[in-house]
Image (cartoon, rainbow, N blue to C red):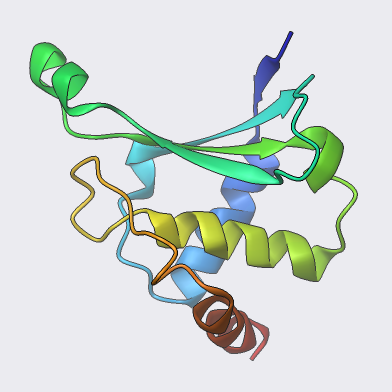
Length: 120
């Protein structure tokens, strides 16, 4: 069974990355969790969004959750963890209305470009 825990360390890294890269996200609407017990062998992280029906029913703006799969993510180097956080933040569109940016934009080229900017 998968268990989820708050990930304040990931949240802090994401805030630092977003600030340094001037990402326009409202980070108060992005939550960060670490999961344990996933059967996913190759998945490092996932991005989830509040479905539009829930936004409407609860009269709320979209929120996003960035989940890191502890068994896979925690083994990575700092550089790879930074790239994963950049990757997941790129999935969140500037409008933050519940949609996702797809892998035509969230690609290795754009991630590497932003990571290079991050490293100075």
